[in-house]
Image (cartoon, rainbow, N blue to C red; front, side, top):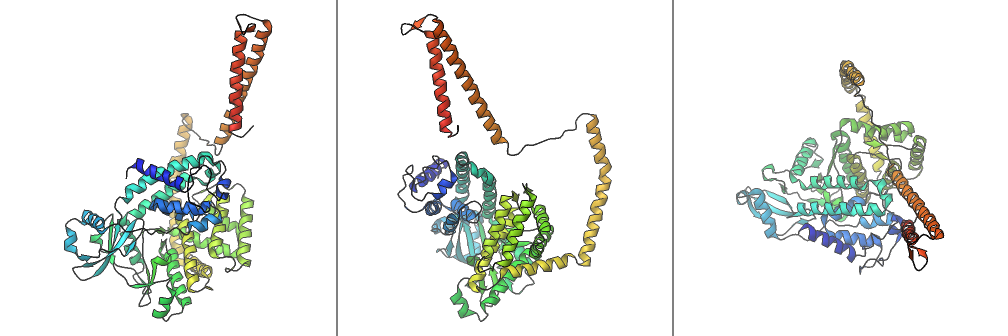
Length: 551
């Protein structure tokens, strides 16, 4: 499909679901509140706007489905009704024909396909928006699964992002409130994530790295990857047989362990990824976590992974410890150290928000205030105080909310938060181990010696630039664009008003002086023209004011 055809399809789908009124809307709040199709749209579908948005995204395909899934985690942007509706988005689509799948395999493996595979099942085992999975058998007799990228999906996604940026620009013109959420930055981050997910070679590397991290842990199993059969659009890995962690009936039939032990095992392995390895599975929903017949846990789908530097692991552990102790000043300090950008308008108000949040966390049970809601309140405080963390921290927050849902299915009374604090304490104890402290002391001494060594030359360079008149300091204003725009509009209106007044007064004097030539018998033509021009300018000024709804 060409880009123009895709534009047409998107516009028609928006109209189909009653959203041809996006340009007409001026208030974002009104847009969210309205429930019936607008008179500006020609959609035939009923239901609330949130429901129609979900159906619209579902119909438009993978890019929009994944965008909706991303937004379903942003309670700081969308109302709760919209969040609940977007959570129902399904990343499941009809599989493409096996003939198209074979073309992709042949393009990726060439003539080696017939030498490598004894057979490939023509029926898809699973089908999602980006790829579909087929069983296969190697000539060695090994059973494998092939994850194959859907034909043409990359070009479609690229076109979709161009359209999404155009739509975002249109929304920004009408809904100024969106500027606070930096939509283009959000879109860039989302595009980067989905393009990374399209690189199946990267996913194969992720699987091998994850497998290496857990090679000495017999509680978990990571499927083997056949690296020679992996390309940008294809992954070949061994087939594993197990039970989805959400299939409680089959788990009861196959396993004697109590569900609370399974919940503890799953969370323990997950926190080990975060606090020990610094490399974690960022999409642990029930479809990606299996319990094998021998009781081991098996994670699948490594397209979305998060990672932390050792320093970031320390910051995360320190944050958890200070939050549990309600040491607000230290919590504030750690958050600002973790942030990639922060511009807190009121430090005292920020600390008060943190204190009130932690008070609620301590006094209200997890049954009444689940971990997912606690995470969302924490995110809201960050947003309100213009603190932005790196993408990996947000991936972790989303994963923790998903993990809580999985463990609650297994054991309603299981406390994920308590296990998290335990791991954080363990990491802090390791942080102050004599061997680790000695290593850190050496690093500090080394950095200090480098700083002292370079200080004289840096100071000399600054003084030299000052002597030559080349020393410059740059001051950058923030958020003054709207103020400048307002001043510009006001000054233009004042100028036009003065011009209209001058024309009226001048024309009146000419009429009173009765200066020829005349029009309409005895009206001086120059005065008449002056009145017409002043009238037109005055009318334009009034229309401009009314159109912007601002006197």
